[in-house]
Image 1 (cartoon, helix red, strand yellow):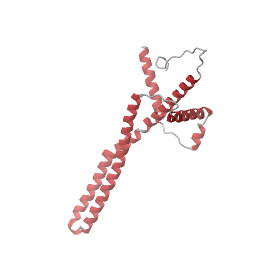
Image 2 (cartoon, rainbow, N blue to C red):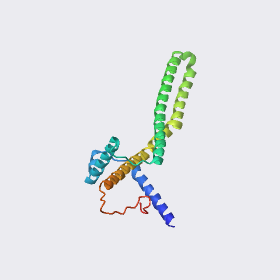
Image 3 (cartoon, one colour):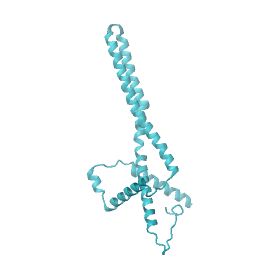
Image 4 (tube, rainbow, N blue to C red):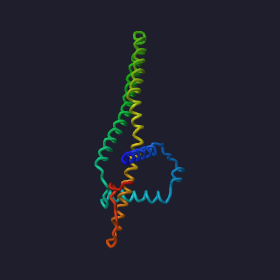
Length: 191
């Protein structure tokens, strides 16, 4: 029964986290100024220090190979979706230019090909609509769906930096004359 309650709790926490980062962030200067506090400034500066220390090789960050692999897969899907959207725009632009040239040629031969020009024009419109509907729209939707995981990944990296920072301070401030009781994070029931 305790396991069921724990699973429900964790599921609810995950849903709350996803819903928190799913909402569109207000990027106006006024909203950013409202969120500024000493705590947030201290946290951002600690994260920045940790990033600089890690880049300089002074401090190492915690690595999670499973998450790194999943993030690599996510980045691949994200890049592919963006590339598909870009390539479809270019393809449709090229097709449109080609059909414009075909129409220009057919207009020069109006007397002979009057029905053929209308048919080609309609084919071009149908082809463009088909490609947009079947490929372009789903690819754009996939790109928009990547925004929430992008924010979650950024938040996870911030939390890893916070953890590394706290661990570094704990190691730095250790007093050999005092004994501290430390419970590892994985063994802690409420974490």
